[in-house]
Length: 528
Image (tube, rainbow, N blue to C red; front, side, top):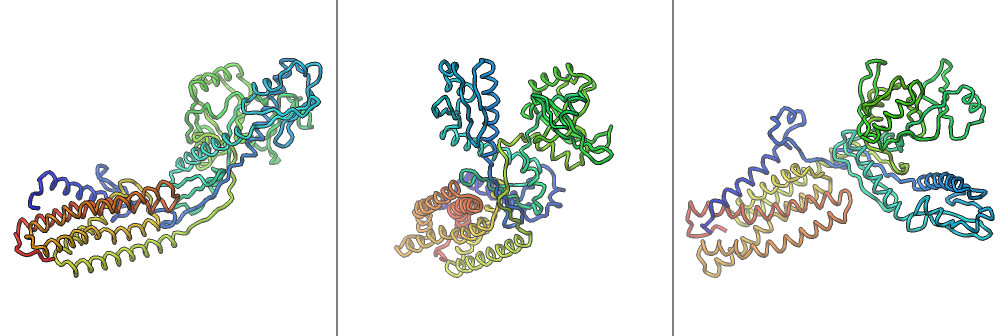
């Protein structure tokens, strides 16, 4: 027992000092921490939705809209394919979630319809209804696979959009086969977030038809083939939106953007959004502007015109600027949508809850009281039952609490109300290891061993039992973290950190204190 190597002593002391440094910032406010030197740790424990308040949204991916758009695109592609090969058909169109058409003889006998459809989209399946009538839809396997991909992709984009707003520690999780749970601690007004998530943010660039005659005809309902009528946010003196006739062909799409930032618009006042294209996008944009100087091109976001400028000169640098009636917030939101990318399918908010900060404050206060009361009762029990050795255990218990706070700050794990329960639980469990060691020492003393031998045996023999019992609990905590969601994960993290901290404080820190005491006093009797 007296043999406590110097390297082990230094390791224990260094570990204690490290976690104290990471735990100390939790004693100060954010304003005070902002004044700290940058070299010092300043991260504090992140509080969950139930502690600091915030917003809860349950989002549902609108798969029907996605598949309807995909089948609509397949209709156009299938029509173009048939026309290019001069294949006769009639009644080609979308009916619900099925494409229907009839092949016209004599071509129907020489055309492989399945090969034709598979060329348009390999996930489409063909059903022969007889008399040259066919129905095309997505196969069951393709539908399942695409839904999984859409859900995962939607979660990634939601995560990027939420993080771009500067929100701290959002919790984004999958629920079932079509829903996403979003919890944003500290956000009391979810309207801006709902506006960001409610937009698919599909951005496209189109060339405008400058013919006044075609525009007038389109206003009467006669729209030329390959064009569509849209309206700009620009309004005339009567407050009417400006009509714009654009070609349906997409010149550029949002996936060719590399970056977007909100900037002050020095020329027109207000704010604008600067954009930077990828290499391929910059080349296509440069060629397009070079060949269409003097013409108007429209930028559409979710089929709504956000700007329609005249091309003054070729733009060859791969950068551009979107101007309009933007405020600082609207320009920043548009930049966020452009950077995060378009959602593959619309999201619908089907449940919304807001947790006020007062409830979180009450929870924190109740958690502090429970923790304090638990620590006091446990420390009192150890002091009464084990005397001086109880003091050693109590000091280790305080360090256990410091280790938990330091580890949560270091890992930036989110502390929730169940997490506080896990902390209180681990504080009670922290002294279990000390109890096992002390009771073993008492047993060795009753068997007639000397104080040095009894203490050495107590720590050495009980160590295996402590390790086994804590490892089983740690495995349970890991399973809770892996299979759990939300606050259950918070409980699992706190429990796992507390278990590791209790093993360290009981096996190493308590042994260090007992070793130092024995070296100095060389007792004839163990006061336990």
